[in-house]
Image (cartoon, rainbow, N blue to C red; front, side, top):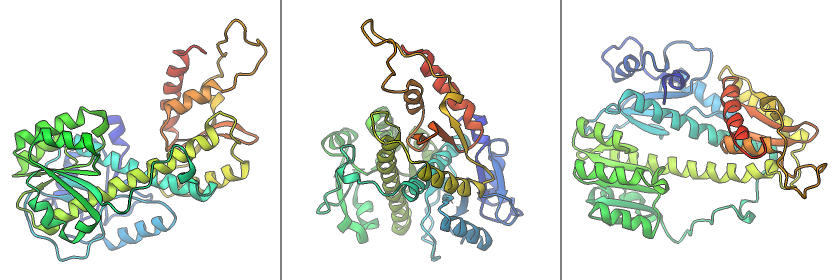
Length: 399
């Protein structure tokens, strides 16, 4: 993440601002020029992008109430729990499950990248809910793009590289729902992934071998997004492993309850990500494929825009709806010598470029009576998408 992008991340630290010795204060100091920082015991006019709390402290009552009210309106602000790299003991507090854990050993800029990805995944789920409410449910099982439903007779695949005894103890209450596989070496772990994919990998190997395995995993496009939890000895090891690509690190001496919370958090995050991928991929071609499918009804578009506007207002933002012709002028379509010179191209090339430049969670559609529309979540996104579309349009045959 570059500094310009990181500065736009709004972070609420869920603790008192007058505790300069707290782990949250260390974050505030490290991120002073990288993010917008606010504290839970101070008044803020808009919702933050993410909330960070401590593992052994309940959420601030006023902040918790405000976030719960936002969630009732379909707006989810992810909560991240900050964990020092000590073994510790399981807290006796009844804590709500977090969206992610963040290690104090994670370098500041890398930590902000992780937070930004957590925020993005929360927005993807939010966008999926908005589209379902505005456009109705999708018949995903009938779609050729829909993945097959998982066989419920088998558990969630979890692969352990190294000693799996700790994992079995930590997840003893959940083993019926898991398909726990183990292997002793990095090569065996990679071979096991070739045979069958996993939803989560746990590495319990010496730090040098764990770092090597992480490097090989993250160099393979198929495993870039695979959640990987690594067991470590101390904070120095955790820093190396997180920098190498670990999703989370937990001390080997941690109590089984703590290890279980981290494992289940990664599994839940992976499930949410898969659900968002499935839903958004289903909606994307429904109104914007350019292949003769019905355009999006104007009434459905207005419902979506109103719901999005209400959600963004809580963050101090408003949606920006643009005709694609405003982003990039429609180019001339390239034609073969025997084409009808007065024929209309089957697909709007600017629409195709916009789809190529955007993500599944970006709203791009052909709307009844309006034409090709892109809806952006903030005005700053306009110039970024304009540059991406312009680069694609200018470098293709129809430019």
